[in-house]
Length: 471
Image 1 (tube, rainbow, N blue to C red):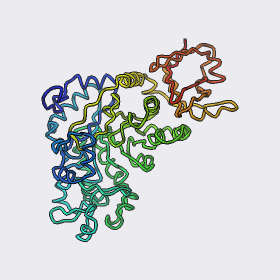
Image 2: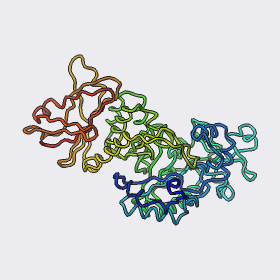
Image 3: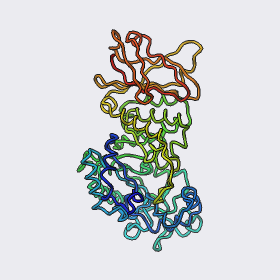
Image 4: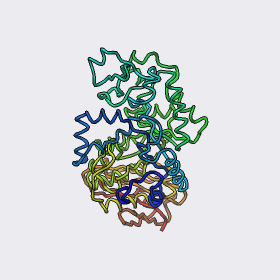
């Protein structure tokens, strides 16, 4: 937008037409990633990392040091960066979103902070400590800051992140400071997406840091933090970036929504049956999941999935219960994943067909049944010598007279099935089944639908997203 305007735009100067366009697509919330003050120390560290520099140059062949504005997850202060206009302009942008019925989500990074965060000077007890011996032995996992040795942030399965310091989730003083920080953040937005939220759980934190962390508190980190914030802000949303099948545990600790990474992995690597079994989980659990096929950590969907497969993956995640996360650029079919350090991205040609598909999908999702209706997984049946029905998954939505049936073929083979509808009022009339995305219409007798179900024949990676109404 800045390039189009030939001037640097900030949050307050984003044209109203941009917010209008988001509202017109039916979104409930906007997550702005990277609004907090970036770290000069973190930038300097990243510019010495050859792996990151290679990633920057792959993304921007004409990369220059000015393009690296620092990681969005290396936070120096929870103050809106002046590059974006500071706190006052965030407030203006939030008001503009609120006028359009859209909530604002920001990031909170509980596991670590930048090396030049004020806590590293004033509260060394908030951090996992190291020794000079640790620093000599493993300089990639420990760092010296103002004479103190700190552990770099990490999760237990990957090398340390060298540009951040590891906070100690077991420190009572840190917990109080986090509650104060989040209390201030809660005055600026309507919810937070908590980076790597499971790392702060007692069981995981102790397994990661052992004796360095000290004794675990009697009450888990999130069981202290979330109720303290919700007490004064009951509608404030907590969203967990969650991995390792910790979604249920995090929901029990107070999170309103958790990433559904397992669905993403199954859509990318596994069978339709694995997806169906995933959708057999308790509905109350599923309604607190965030479905996606793209975010800033994953490759672009247009790179992960082939053209038709990308469409069926989109129909799948977008029509399931729970929240649906769409990544900026996903609609246009962007293929380059942008590192969170960079201030600009390469030019890419918009895929007009993909954009039209997504706009039609989002328009369909505005139906009352998708927003407020009842969701149900549908039974698939078959006949002898037809195993292809196992490639199919079907589900439906209903809110009064608003009904949709979704059937997807999650395979590279033509597949057939009978999809059994759970509705008991199908008989005695004809039904029109219209797919607004593919502009197809089918008329079927209700008696047949009631007794046998809907016969479905789908090409590889095919789908039906059918609006069902009496004809």
